[in-house]
Length: 113
Length: 111
Image 1 (cartoon, rainbow over the protein chains, first blue to last red):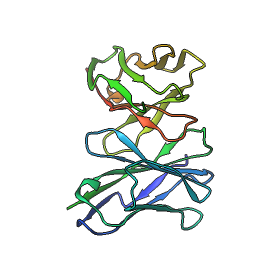
Image 2 (cartoon, chains in turn orange, blue):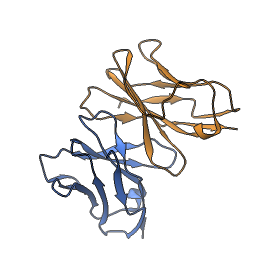
Image 3 (cartoon, each protein chain N blue to C red):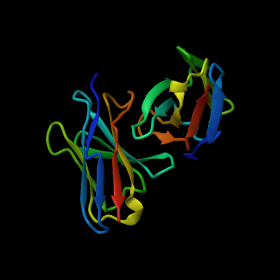
Image 4 (tube, chains in turn brown, cyan):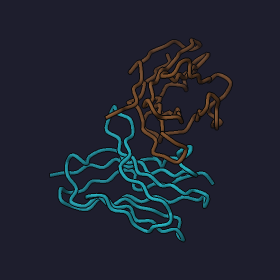
């Protein structure tokens, strides 16, 4: 069964450093999303991406964040200058269409020290 | 108006019993209501979903009940099993675009 994959599974970084989180969506999916989950809290929407551009972003997704689909398979989330409060689990999701089920990857646990 | 409220925060049910988790929403534009199951260290996985044109949807032991006028929906797990122990999130969206999640319910099934 096709699945969304994410790398790395864990990332530890120093405050102020840049991190890139990588995702490989399901191959025939066209819509891509990033969500985050701070430990013990609910899953929060960050950004949606379709046709090589951002469809929608939340107020969390400020200028420190960017997304990119550098090739036909990867979808990345970059945090330019990490802050302590960026520590969370980051989930990538993809869907075949805008009204279709979103499938989540296993997540990247980011710890900012 | 984008909030989805979920209760209870945690739930302990005996094996074979019925687990019930409730959610309420405010935004009447929401038209898609999925439930996700999450095991520790894993991403959320879609369990079952409903659209507001029906009041109930059943898949195996899992049933969603939907009350459009009250803006509430609930997940019922019949014959709960230890393998059902997980965190459950309700969510809502408009046209299945960005999902707005509830705060989660940690379900524990005891023997």
